[in-house]
Length: 459
Image (tube, rainbow, N blue to C red; front, side, top):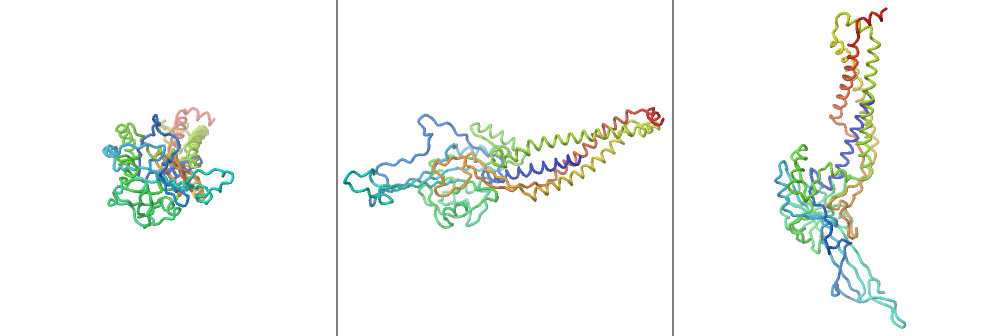
C-alpha cells in the first residue's frame, strides 16, 4: 500500500509539473490570465488568389539610379501568412457572453522589407572588344538584395490586462497606455531590440512609417519567448496594413475555471465561423520533449498508477482474508460468546483501516522523498509553442522571407514536481479506501464463521 500510494503521489506531482511547464510556454503566446482564444480558421485561396510564396514586384520606374546602380526598396505589412482576420465587432459579441470578465483583440502582422541594388541594365558576358560591365554594388555589374522581416502585434493600448502584453515584463521605458491610441509609438521585445541594435528613444520603421520606441519588454517567464517583436496600437496597425476593422485573435478571461466550458460553448454558438480554444486544448500545441513527458505522465503514468494501486488493494484484501483464516479460533469464540456479525465486521475493518493509514503515512513519506529527488535533479525538457495566429518566436533583421505564421519558439524548461494539498489528501483517501475495502471483505469472511468451527479448531 505504501509503495502504491507513493507512486500515485509522484505521478500526480510530475503531471502537475508538466502542466505548469506547458502553461509557462503558452503564457507568452496566449497571455497570462487568458482562458480562451478566438480566431478564424484560414480558408482555402479562392480562384485567382495568390497561394504561393510572397512576391515583390517593381515597375520599370521604381527605384533610384546613381553611378550606374539602381536601388530599390519596398516594405509590406500584412497579416501573417496562413492566418485569417475577422471583424473587430466580434469583440463586442464576446464581451456580452455571460461570465466573461475581460476580452481583448489583437492583430498579428509581419513587416517584410525587400531592398537591393542592381546595375541599370542587364548584364551579360561582354562581346568581343566590348568593355567589361560596370555598376552595381561591386562596381562590376553585380547585384545585392536583402530581406528584413519581423513580427508586429497590434493591440488596444487601453486594455492590456489580458492578452500577450500582459505576459510581458517591462525592462526599459514605458508600456503602451490609453493615450497612445492612434500614435506612432512602439514597444519592442528586448531580445529583438538587442539583435537590431535599437533602444528606447530611437525609431523603428514599420510599413515605411517611423515609430518612436517608448519601451522594451521581455517574457515574464524565463522559459518562454515573447509573442511578437514589436507592439503598436491596434488602430494604427489596422490602418497601415489596410485591414481596417479587422482582428486576428480575441483573448478571453472567464469569471472562474468552472465557467470556461460554458463560455466556450456560448462563444461558439454566437460566432459559429470562428475557432474557440481553451488553455487545455492549446496545451496540445506544445511540442518537444515536454510533449513526450506530458504523454508519459498522462498515459503511462496514469495506467501504471492504477495497475499498481489495484494490485495493492488486491494484496491487502488477500492478506486480510488470510489473517482471518488464521484467526478462526478467535472469531469463532467471539461469536460463541455473543458477538454479532456486524461487530466482527467492524472489528476487522477497524484493524485493516489502521493498517491502511500506516501504509498511507509511509507512502506519503516515500512519495515526498521521490518528489524531492525529482526537484533536485530538475530534468531539463525542450519545448516549443505553436501560435495559430501569430509568430511566437522573435526574429531579427533578415529573419526570414515569407515567414510562416505557425512558428515554434524552442526553449529549455527545468521540470519541477510541486507538492499540493490535493495530492496529499488523495493519498490519505486512497489509504482509507484501501483499508476499508480490505477490512470489509475480510470482516465479511470472518462473520461467516460459525462457533462450531472454533470448537473443532480447539479439538
